[in-house]
Length: 556
Image (cartoon, rainbow, N blue to C red; front, side, top):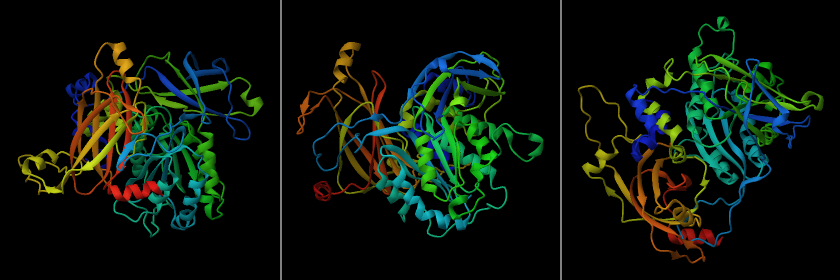
């Protein structure tokens, strides 16, 4: 099992949450991941001739066909990226090492992943683009939630989703520990065809990482070469060495995770006119996923700004296919907007998907049983997606948590080390007939977590349901590479109302203790209301500042 896979299975292995009925069925059938397309969600980005979003369209303006057969639209809504998706309430100053799942500014639009591909970008272009990458941050619209993945001899998450431009800047300039952009410029095989297999693996991993997070997600691929075939629809006779099932699986992962892939070519950074993303090939790759291509410009910060702004607003539609044969075949979608050509409107949407059968060809994912099991459960339970390192902050349920260390770090006992054996950071491949030697003890730091729930709707909802309020509290510690070190999940019980210093009322209180191995860099925390499945999450960088350090920081 690869390191990327271990990150994905982390939550399932550690938290020990019971599998859903779907996951249990998966076990009985050899952990084969199967997908059934019964309802096709599709996002349509509509822009005018100046690239501005077109608002005010109605469901009746859209016509959808699948393989030329008309389809009936089942749902329709407009997601306006100019309207905040979350406006943070004003909070009083917090005590040291007390955190709330409230951002510093309003959040706008869908999620964006900046995928900076060093391996497929020529060294001279890396040199030109490196300082411009920082300039790109300044052009991002305020409130856009952005994560940064970098391909540098392996795919690495440098910064999880954030609206904080300073955090993104620090991730770009960081020198370690953990993954960081190297000072030396990398050499990649960018004059040949590139590594198609690695490119597909990276896209597939990011799609699986984003699975379970609600709504549309956008991957903005920054590179000078995009070494994947022209989408899944191609003349197979011309590409004899290509693994077509792998290509189809990658594009299907992007579809099922509602990910649109846009290509941002860096060829123009040094004045070159060979902008790959402006070619017909780049347009085709992007269009199959609902994204767009951007290139032919030596101002990459403007290209990136345009990519973010054009993908911020969209129409979300869905339909149930009239063709009920789920045989894995390619299905071609066409959307026509009344008079859009006359008005100069441009439409971007996913134009291809695969009708994967319920009991058909086995997915290539099945070769990794633990990963298949996790992905199936993750699709059924949103908590798994939200407890992963770097996932966006969630605000469906507002809470505070005070963190403190309990005593000095202590060497783990044999029993504690045994409990860590299956965690991704400590995982070792087992050989048949050869038991593993005990892990050498590591130092553990005990953290105390004290939760307070600030959601005023909790008790009225409990009265409406006629049951006591029950919340699930989850904490997971990750190292600098994003590998899970340890985690805990348990339920909290309602307590008496406790007034806070800020005048708010804590309606629910719970405590946890987690033994965190040395080297932990992140502590991911989630709270779920089991009455309505609303979730709140936040992430804290470790080690904690001392009370004096944080008080001084707040005062500044």
